[in-house]
Image 1: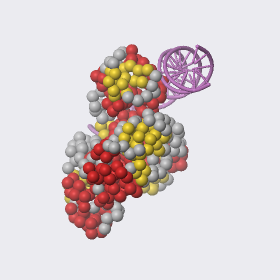
Image 2: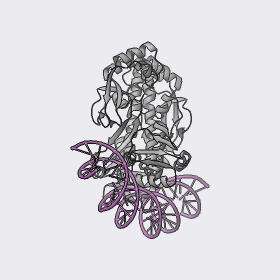
Image 3: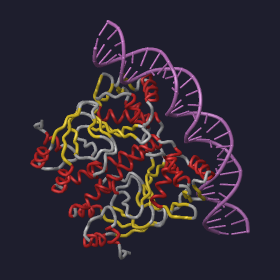
Length: 231
Length: 231
DNA sequence: CCGCTTCTTTGCGCTCCAACAAAGAACGGA
DNA sequence: TCCGTTCTTTGTTGGAGCGCAAAGAAGCGG
């Protein structure tokens, strides 16, 4: 199930950037591939991380459920990303659940093996530090958004982020490449599907976006960017 | 200006945990101490980090200002903490401003020196990874709070966190050890000073808290904990 | 001790958005 | 093709909390 170019793929990820080809091949050889069907959980909130996962194909969303049951989608992972990296490196339970949005493929390594690799190749540790730091800043931006931005702008941010990350050109716009319901958007923007539906409908009338069942596309990116303001 | 026990202090911080005494002393000898008066900025949002800072005494708050000017206080740093660690490790501009709440003392090392130290002592890199990871999870919790919790609970969280971190016993309760205005609380809870004032006043009538100008104390911790719910 | 500045309290109206409710629309399976 | 399920749209209502406004306290400097 190992694919021929896994080593090459690893070399283009943030975590294994800057490693010599032979190291990449050794690392790839140590990996166990894993497939996750759409809708299936890769790991669950509260579980102890036994493996490090690296997404090689597909889309995986990271969702957190609070004690009171309110769901929040933290981010969508793309190929090259390492879902659950913070928990795996810190050896603490996963703070969120990772769910495959579409059929996806991951490479996995036992946690101890990664610790060993990091020791032998300090570059991996440095890369990991950069990756985790990036996540911290991302979460900071998100906090700020929730704390200070009104709903409409938060929804606009979600669309901009998703099209930047997973946008594919389509007649008259850029569409998010995976199925995305109003409920999904609501969980990313910290609101309800009703408010999302109303907002998108209004934007659709104004020609900013278009969409259908589980589909959203931005038609007028400049106008959507104007909604989020300058920052 | 180096203090006698800086090395011992370093050994009890998360960043330098687990290092041999001699290493600690070498690291301490390389440090340049820096004093920051109350109200003075240690570093500013947007600036390039030239040094790594480690707080040895005092309190420093980390505040972010959005493009639209909305202020948000991300967290308060205590002795042993490393304000700006994410930016310093990633070599990106500081995402926030660090301001001394009271007269404070920090140790500083040039960025390159830290990189070198991390290379020579992998344990420091591991510690840094754990520290940054901890921050990520903290920011995740904060996001969740802003996204799903109503204002009253967020204010309760702020008080619980601050008294846990900087609480000192006082007649009939636990007081936050540094001056803290309603505005400060509002910036931590993502609301306005008006709402904070109203809420605290109401709680004061009910005997949960007490306070004065720039002072807040929790009188009935159980009741405040009940407000935030179970999670 | 007095005036000024900073911080806090309180009132009021209004807006945004969540909650509740219910009807369409699109898809999938039998 | 029909039916059930899932997703989306739309209406209505109510309440949380923000913006605006202004009047007290409390500390500080002269």
